[in-house]
Image (cartoon, rainbow, N blue to C red; front, side, top):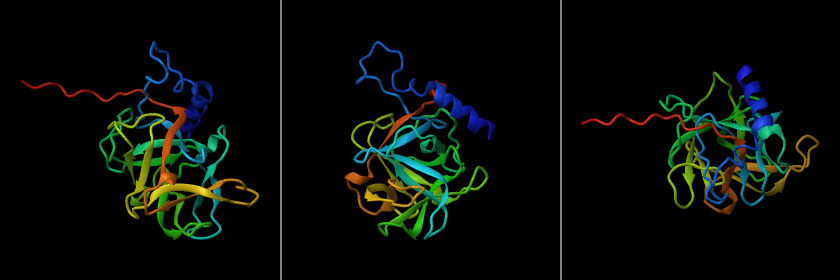
Length: 220
């Protein structure tokens, strides 16, 4: 938990650094790579909401921790740590290519972004939830990164899709919102089986760790 608090304070102090790194290049030319260990907010392209979770369970379906889309930008419960899949040899600071299997761990509650065959509360699509903790993660936490357009490495503000490996559903949000007191006004987040404009996301605000992967030594 000490690591989580360290990252949280780093976010408060340095969250603007990823948006405007010192450079002689114009803002349109600056490219910040998403690496393992980076702590990011995922923004839904159409609704502009951020992927969000808190220690509030669903009242239906799995009863696991709820995941929603929050319309505000500055809530700390929308930070997620980018992790490799369980058993991967990838290290903190490694870049992430399109087609890679990743996991997203909620910074505040340590739950993993998860999906399964339970029905989502508002639309009856696939439920997306928070599951497990630092010591518990399963295949339902695995998502395939799919970069839209050109470029093979994941970058900040680049359009992506996340496809759930076990169900095939794409991480999705839409117009349906909750009316309950705790998450009133939040958008439903769910999984759907078809590609469409409502399953496009971007890595927005966050702390982007520098690249640390070492180049392989040339052999002669």
